[in-house]
Image (cartoon, rainbow, N blue to C red):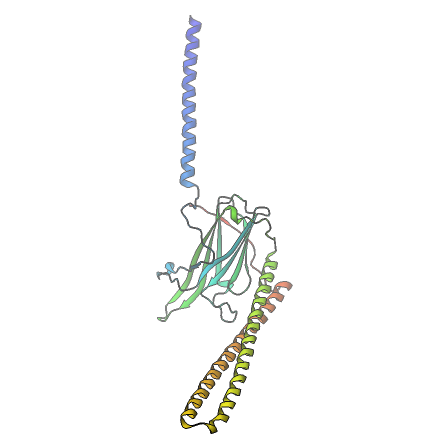
Length: 309
């Protein structure tokens, strides 16, 4: 009988301990879940920045309102390879001249801050390619990363009509991870190769524009020549015409000469555009040479920050 009482007492105390341990484990699990919900970074309610949609540099930190018509940043392309764990994004600074001689926002005016969501920090490098165009390379990025937050700070200062100096502000863009982003065929080029490839493409584009301008000049010159022939023929007919006919002929000659003035304007504008693009090509070729021989130093790689809500 005594043995049964001891066994019952042991069973009752053991059950109590099990309940206490079970309750403790339950509270630990619940606390962990609540902590993760409260503190884990999430971009569920943050919209992804659309491609080719400019995000203006906010000037709210100076007390001024945002100006959507001013300079900004547009994400123009993005590709990720889970095979090489590399993300490549291309950006364009909008609202500023893409000609090197006219651009006001220089690479030295911009500070790039990159944050990762859902993984530890990765390495990144911002590569200025052609004027107002940049490539962002992010390496060692796991395929389960949640998102990338890019903040571009513009330190370029402008002086308003009232003499007030305004800072350039900053623009924030977000890229979320999704299956369609993965491209196993993404080439793993070096920063130098990205810069040189982009310059080559831009030079080809400028050369194509020059070719088109030369065609405009040829067409305009041919039109002027044809108009001269028309004027000569009508001037010969004048001595055989009546007064009313002469008036119509002279009016027609005036219209032809007006058309010639338009063609000469087209020629002049095309020639100026050719000169401008030739200057731009010469600048890009010099930059390309300097990148190749190391005289033009590309920005050094950095470490991304971890996004914390």
